[in-house]
Picture: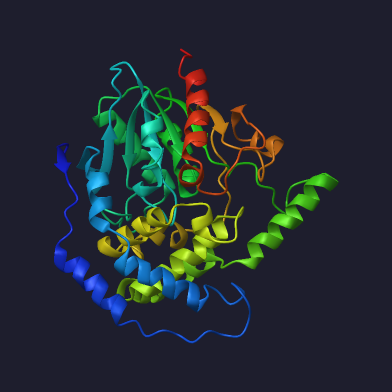
Length: 363
C-alpha cells in the first residue's frame, strides 16, 4: 500500500473524438434578454470558445507538457493520490507542496514550475480532482491535510513548506496542523482575515465589508448550490461539454476580478486545459466534495503551527488574520486576481521564493 508508481497521462483517442462529437451536437440555448454577462455566459461568447475548443485547442500538446513532469500515484489512507514530483538540481533544496484550488487542477501550476527551480516541488491532485481518486463519505480539508502530510513523509521529506490558494488555502494550514514541526511555513494566496458580521470593524473596514458582500452577491453562490444538490448539476456537467464549459467560464469570469473576460487574465489554452482535464476525468461532480461536505460557508482561518505568508493583503484584513495566524509576510499591492499562479506566474513565484527563503532558513 506504500508503493509509489510512475504515471503518465494517456487519454484514449476515442475519448477525444467523443468530445468533438458532443461539441458538434450541442443544442444551443437562445440568448436571454440582458446585456453582456447579466444573465450568465453570453451565447455568442460561448459558441466562439466552444469552436476554438473543438478546432484550435490541442489536448495532446497539453498532455505532452504535463508528461514532461515526473508524475506518480500512491495510496494514502485508502485514497489513491496523483502528484507531480519535480526535483530541484540542488539536492539540499527545500521541498515545497503546492495545493491547487477549485475549480482548478494541477494545471494551475504549469507556468510556475520553471520559476521555482530552487525547490523540490510536490504538486498533488486533491482527492476527487483530476487523476486522484474521488473521496468517500466523511472527507474534509483536515483529512486532506493529513493525507498530504503523509504523502510528504512517504517521499522522505521531514521538513518542507506548503502553499495553497482557494480550496488550497483551507488545506495548506491543515497540513501544518497534521505535521507540526515538519512544516516550516504556510503560504496562501489571500483567503485569510476576511471580516464577518460578527467582527467589530472600523468604519473603513465596514465599508470594505459592504463592498465585499456586494461582490459576492453579484455572482453564482457555488457554495450553496453544490452544498444543496451537487448530484443534480453533475448530470449536465458530466454529459455536456458545453454545459461544463459554461459553468467553468462563469466561475473564472467571477474569479478574474481585474478584467472583463477570463482570457484577458489567464491564457485561453490554459483555461481550456483545465476544463478538458475535468471533462476527461469525469470529476466535475466529485470535485465539489468540499462544498457538499459543509453545513455552511466559512472563510479559512489558518493556523499557528508554522509562520504564515500571504501573497497580497486585500481583500483580507491583517489584524483579523493575526487572530489565528503568525503572519510574517503580508505585502500590499501585488498584481493579479484570484488565481495568481495562472495570471502572474513569475511575480507569484518570486514572492513564494521570498517567503520560503526567509522561513526556510529558521531552525
